[in-house]
Image (tube, rainbow, N blue to C red; front, side, top):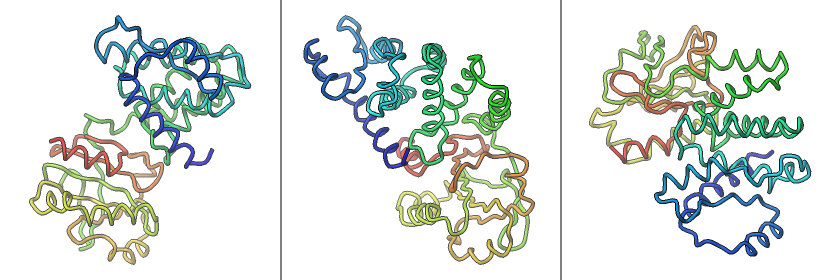
Amino acid sequence: MRINRLYYMFMAAIVLFATSCNQNKKSEDNNNSTESESNTYIVPKAPENIQGEAAKINYVFAHFWDDFNFRDTAKVFDPNYGEQAIVDYIGHFPLVGIDTLKEGVENVLNEAKIEPKVFEFFKYQFENYLSNPNSPARNDLYYEIVLEKLIASGKLSPDEVTKYESLLPLLRKNKPGTEATDFKYLMTDGTTSDLKSIEAPFTLLMFYEPGCSTCEETIEHIKNNPGFNSVLENGALKILAVYPDGNMDIWKNYQKNIPPSWINGLDTDQSVVSKGLYMIKATPTIYLLDKDKKVILKDSNLNEVIKFFQNI
């Protein structure tokens, strides 16, 4: 699936959730007509007697798949029906509690087990949206939950079980609320330092790759953002940009592209990658840390970082 489709499907789901609770209830005839015309899965709505947005969301999440036909592979494999339903479901993940989320994922995978091809389809879509480095829905916490439920499903091959069990410890590293793994890096003045030595209320840790177009765009966005410039100037934020692949010549030739107000580091022994200290699926990989180097945002993006600073 092309990443453009992935992005627009997920963003469409976000818009849907932002408005669904305020929509007027349609008649059953209209619902049936809409489903027939668009061939999309119609998500059950919360009954009118349920009060409060949280209760409505929890009801919809618990009954999300009630009307989904897991046996009709022709419909399930239709992107506008099966894939879009999964996108909409993932869009609910941030809206419910962790226990509710775990129960829901387990239940839908149990339903999908009715048809082996459908189970494989759900497994692929969850992985693609939650693990793909270019996915706007990428989230290690949610992906960890899915992997746990996949392993417990009894439907994986021995090789898949081994693969997922080896991946779980990496997903569990550097989770929000935990202390970020420390590591050493070479600085442009020739001295060596480590992550814990940075003194600032907040640290933005960015793993980058010279020549990476997305990295260059991110660097430019930060350089030209008044908010970032303000918190950098008053000392509230320090940025540590690290090239983790250890090539000294490439790093030195790229130094002019990293702002002098940032800390530009080189992982000379490539411990970040070789020891699995951080999972770098794509560059840039961004973490936001507090003064004690506890993770606030993991494998994040600039929009989330900006939103965080706007809300404090």
